[in-house]
Length: 383
Ligand code: BGC
Image (cartoon, rainbow, N blue to C red; front, top):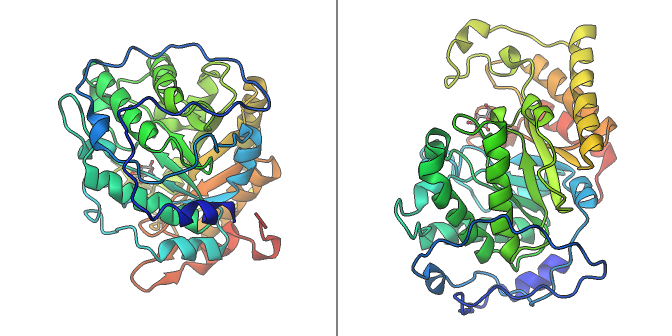
């Protein structure tokens, strides 16, 4: 309900002096230690913020920090709005975000939407790297709809391919993109979470990624001192990537994530973007002893990493491609979701309405067998 009150005032257009410093957070009941200022100085760029009215007026100082462990639990059962806003242009991959999707996923029982976004395709290549205002407005609308429907919303940065090829050439742009995003959304409620980068790989190995993560976190912390931010390992954000990573610093408002697609030859059989995957067609997953034990072992390792690093862990993607047989997909999805939940891990399914889809946007029908194992109706989440 608290979100609705906030949204009632969100409809009036307010032009805020965006060039001004971010509002100071209200004093917090439990003082949190100041964070090391590891962000590089703001590049000397023209003051692009003055042109960017904030989308949602929100009473200053009203941001009530949520404990990272508590919020990781609140993420509950989520779904990725994949193949929409991370396409080079929304719609190019056959799907656009539609208003009805939000109440649809909420009513089906999901608690969270993770929104993959290709920001890098909607910003100037050169300084000041301005994000196109109309693209920002589109994301504003996505966030507004998610909050209106009582969904947590994870805003990520997806498919920044140039960064994976040329870290030094793109470092400043990456940080400035996040400066714009974090500044614009700094006054939104804590149910909006930031995930700085999907599946780091290529030029980003463990070490260089952790350094970049600390930098981007420091940039985000200038304007969002207490918002929960999602941390991932390198190596494509896999469990292995996470296991090789360590907690980046002592910032208390971090939630760790990993993506789970094992066995890969099962979940990615026939995936057009994975070379050689047509040879895997016909791979089944029926949940025999070894198959189950492997999933259990992996989930145990994720939990152990969380304990050792004192961080909550969220499985931000998992799913099996539609070229696998439906019985196997259902069995695997069920087993992975339950194995995660049994250990207190929350998750987001990959994805809503495309190749892994739990919903068919053409026939407007849920894929009931998959939906039923994702959301076990008898155990309504009651958030
Ligand atoms: C990638 C998608 C891919 C999915 C499963 C996502 O993180 O962005 O392109 O379909 O993982 O491989």
